Image 1 (cartoon, rainbow, N blue to C red):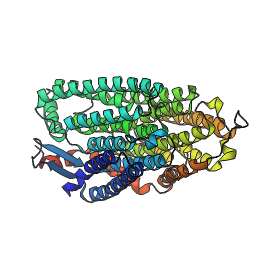
Image 2 (image 1 turned 135 degrees about the vertical axis):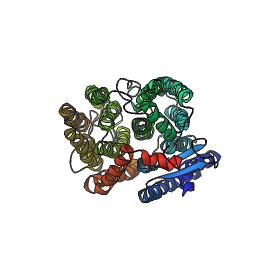
Image 3 (image 1 turned 120 degrees about the vertical axis):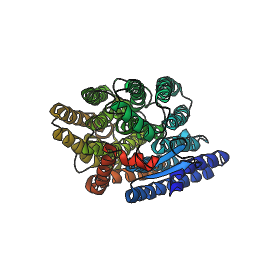
Image 4 (image 1 turned 90 degrees about the vertical axis):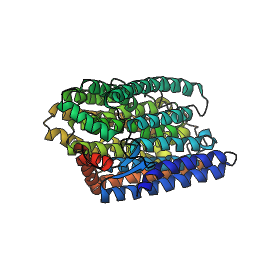
Length: 498
């Protein structure tokens, strides 16, 4: 089974390579890309089934045993992240095949998406913190190229802001790596956990904690968490909608994944004080939702909501009970699908109405009520309405705050949900309900009607996760228990707990 862990890395790499070779044959390249992500998605389902049976899968690359070699590890958290990442990339690539936008036909688009996918997969599966850094850099290079693919001035401006802050984040990460390696002499996360626990017992944890703080700052920047979020709304609205959907579904979620590993495995105790991390989570929720409420541009609103939704996940990480972590994991999956679909719907709607500025839009409900229904499903899910996936995700987070008697956090979570609804309904009224300001505007979908397929698929997943998500939440609960008790992870990697 160890070979199974290499496939989420090899399949995107092979797809990207053949995509580059087929760059002169657009149709061949697109089918290679779609075939590659279909295989990846199938691997995701196979991987989660094996992890459910065996709890952990490990592979030692090159036969070098941990902690000296490169270790790949899959637990339930890794498997869930692989599966949901595959779902959003599949939908985005399907959407891109049905668009007339330039990026959908650029010979660089499909290979770059698969390189981005390879970097994300490596981050989810690596058991080595240095290779987590390497995977972040692969993602950074791919995402920068994707952001500037159409060569527009606003995209270049957004990409500069994005890259500068993320390069700074990477430098902080690298500094933390150097400090940690100098202290513990290892980069294997399971081994670091064992050494860190001993350092806590010996009261010699100062340099390790400092490295942990550097990691925390780096991962918080990449996750778009308060107070490091400002690069995100300045850049995520600038690329084409399929790229925005990819970024919302993958980039910040890898940052959040790294935060979960940091707080449950790598570092002893709390990297930050419990109350401080909770406060930062609540601040992320509130600042994100207030920012969204103040905007009048569709994808700027959605970009600020990426920030606010990250706040819910950070709250789950801070509470750190099995239920809270399970809720955070389910929330990540829900958000990947719901937020990604909103970006795709926004792209389709703006193509038809001719603008993403709300005062220049309108008339979509009369012209295409199907798209309006799909939008409402995704928007109500983001706001936390039953019986959609967002209700399950937010209710479980709120219940975790109730169990921990964190009433102020519960109030902030509910308030953020209500303000999220306000922003979503503002888009609904302006884009769908009111008449278009140009009565002569042609609002027919034409060939764009094919793009209803991927957004309908994601809307169906949202409904399924709301009505039939019980088994998935049970898996998330098992994942939360694994995270709270990392001894199983350590034993799977090292063979024994030293």
